[in-house]
Length: 283
Image 1 (cartoon, rainbow, N blue to C red):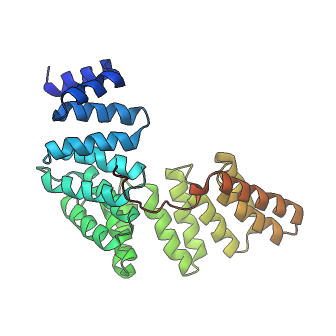
Image 2: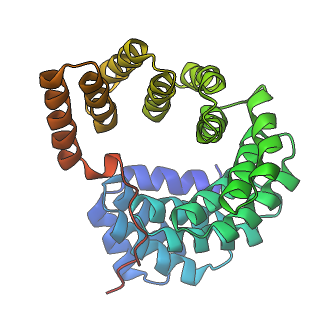
Image 3: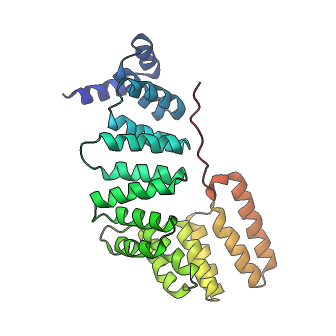
């Protein structure tokens, strides 16, 4: 049995109280703090988990796996700056390029609003994984965010044509088409995004907007109703449906959908707005 396997068995068998006691009696024990942090994270106490891991990484600053775990936990809490720093540090320590770690770093940098740094990380990612659809998309996305849309397009198209294509390149490419009022080409691109991910509500909404741009209001209404059937609690399809119904002369239906959208947004304000980055609370 490896040391890691033994530690995992210990973690599964130990209670939070036992792990807390182990940390109290051995405060400079990396494994005790690592496992206690894992238990706290599993119990939903992410901030306390991070406090244990911060103490653990101070004992073993060369531990890339823990830094990667911390980056994910930081992101869950909205501590995007801390997440980016942890992932960046882990990237300097791994012996070989790690696609998942690159992605964690890029996403954390994006969430922190540092698109200049995200572009550099995405460039490193695509050099390490030139055939990766995800790397192609992230680099294309960051080129566009950094004011280089003409350079971004070939990378988006390569991501879309990859056997490993995911929904985001299609959605983002459709956004670019919509900016130029190329509604018809955007439709096919968005339908491909939806085929790859049926519950991708932003793609359904953008699809309806393209149909509205083509004055196909009945089709737009049908697509929005399909989106609502998939996720009735997302406010955006209801809001756009209210606009379609109003244009079709159904003022009562429009008012009902608008009120429902506002209620859903109050109940879940994060459904439409990303959380701003915040500093980690250090006692």
